[in-house]
Length: 158
Image (cartoon, rainbow, N blue to C red; front, side, top):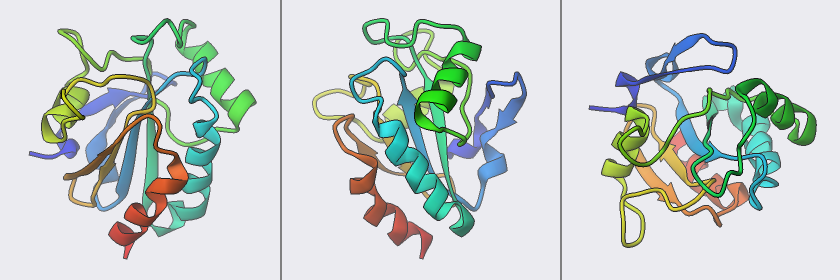
């Protein structure tokens, strides 16, 4: 099994297979535009801009499961990401990352790499680094900035 077996719906309504990213290093992130960690969007965008040509992709999955920090529609979320943070990496429609209705991709991610004390996602901006074959390599806490992930990502891109 790998992340490549899953699919999700992009902001424009297009169903997208994660297999389309096979051969690329991925950073999968649950996001929220009204979260205190939202400035990380800029760091995520910088990673994307600096390394996309090397085979790197950031995949953003907005979620409103933590303190109502992504309350708007998908359109409002996409617009806020673009206008406030300059995001142009792939954003998917809002999902749940925990519980019975969690998206299957996030169930898989949390089964592969558990957090400290629990498999559940504790907050927005939890990040998962995925290798070119779809294997979950590492999980990062919401407090881990994109810049601190760059060395791990660069090692996979070599």
